[in-house]
Image (cartoon, rainbow, N blue to C red; front, side, top):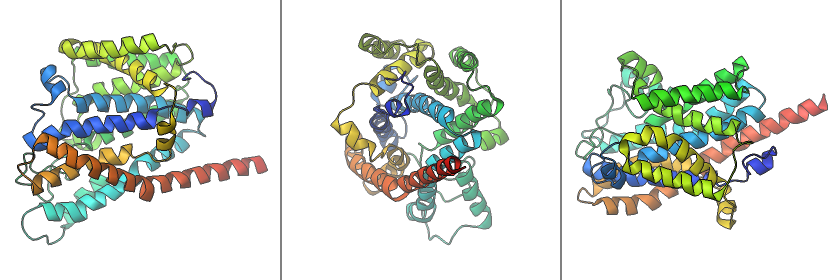
Length: 365
């Protein structure tokens, strides 16, 4: 139950498997981008007249799930800095491994000419990308021109741009916790309603070169803040929101209806998609879910999918969307598996060991 006060019961959910499904949707959507150079031909993109695609739908779901789960983490944790340390350890180690792979192996092999190493300025750009969870060369280039003959030339990884927004949402939630406002459910609800209203209105923060480099493109903040705060608001009201199969079916229905009414997507999708995901996340578990909980490859799958797709298209330029998807899927799952076991799980184990040591120290006092 999502309204359980028990941490153990709260963690009995399908979020890990659900996130893998969302990562799979992103991979499928990006297969069209890798082959066509755009979302042209992607089913949801065509259905909504370009207002939404399966990748964007999945990313919105990631932000809902993140807002819900990290709210529990902040509530159960030992303070703001402990929360930020956990979130940093969840995102950065796997990203660092990908950053090294992209900069030192994929980029030299995927660019024309002999690689003579990076200049001091280029090293600075790479370090900026690492510090800010940015894609290769973001936001103004200056590095190697990768995949020059692909339909998406010069692009290493189109998935990474959302990570900055997610970490920015973590910082915002941490600020609420530091100020002592996070437990004020009405305040979080009002913040969600404000973000949602701005998202519906279509108003966007103006683009600015320096601000884009520092805090990401402001035009996307209303959207991501809406979905993240939808998850956080749901967490705050979980004790009063009923979990009913009928409501879950209705929420999925409204989500599908929104696809046919593209103009209403900003108004319908945040609450409908939020409830639908929570309902799916807390459906009764099964053996597959229990097995998957021990190996969460969703983050690694999300990180490695597009570079692998770019390499597949570079090697086989005539590949169709279906071929790219079918070849990329097992390779990406394998990369996600390696990322989990070689990097992510180790850092999570360190974090849990430190938490246990801290608790033992407190009990010893």
